[in-house]
Amino acid sequence: MSGRFVHIVPLIALTACSEAQKSAPQETATTALATASNSAATSGSAKVAAPLASATSGSSASLEQARETEAKERKEVVDAFQNLAASANPLTGDGMTTGSDGVGGPHLKKLPEVRMGALSVDGHLAPEVVQRVVRQNFGRLRVCYDHGLKANAKLEAVLWASFTIQHDGSVTDVKWKGSTPNADFMNCLTQAFERMSFPAPESGVVEVKCPTAFTPGRDGSSPSKLGGTNLSDVRPNDVKAALEKDGCTDVVRKEIASGVTSRTVFTATKNGHRFTVTFVGSNDPPLPVDALSNLADVGVVKLEGGFVLAIQCEGDPDKSAARALLDALIVTS
Image 1 (spheres, helix red, strand yellow):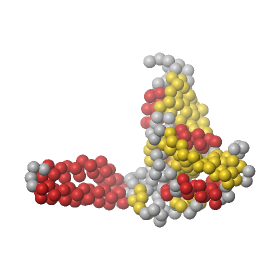
Image 2: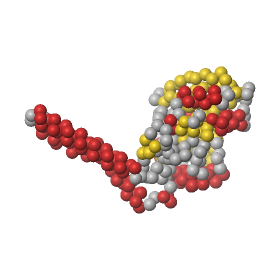
Image 3: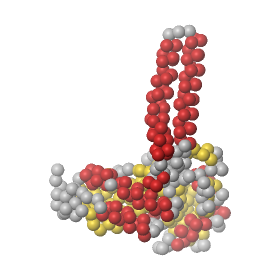
Image 4: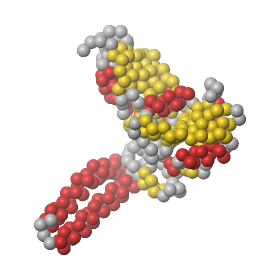
């Protein structure tokens, strides 16, 4: 089909993994974990279905015995899954683990993650073709983040990538907008896009934009805190209390819902500056990457696991006031 495409398509989220830490024992645990996860419902159900089926036509005593057997079998499946999960490495992409961060008891440890939002395509190349090529090369971005995490375990970024697909399908003019944490990381990302090869457009060139979020995850050890509360446990009331404790006045809270996602937005005043603070909790539905990128474009953003705290300040072009408030609110161990 010919014609000029201006389209937006959704992309994917992948966890970042450390190549250096992919040992054989971890791969074994990963395989077993995946097997337990995928077959827990089917295997567990199959093991308990037979006694229940045979008991339905028998006595009430037989039915009760079958129910006890069902409960026992299900517990065995759950216990096996939890034991396998506990043996997986929380930061290598090898699985999820359970543990305690000192507040709130056991929880699932979040893996580092690379998420890409809606892909914008402007030109004579089908959007699904562009999406497919980017999807096939997404591992390159994951490798960049993996190396970045080795140098800085707390590396985080929310970026807009834009690039041009030339007449021969090659990529040029890779540019980034948003937070740029360090030169090596950004150079790696740029090279990852430059190495992509697309089918030749029907005519002209194609302009592509895609927002990307790099989140360091949470391993449960020495977590960052807001107002004395681990970021994984922060709730809207904690954010309001922290703002007021830091000297902010006229703090107003508003809940904003959009589709399946929601966020809490605060407005506050400090030292003559007017701030807008956006919060999403670790257990809330994740904010779309497009929205994260927009927040990073106009302010500063703190990401950890599913936790998001974004701060924007009016009349603060270099974001220094917003950064100062964020640094005052978030204490990193």
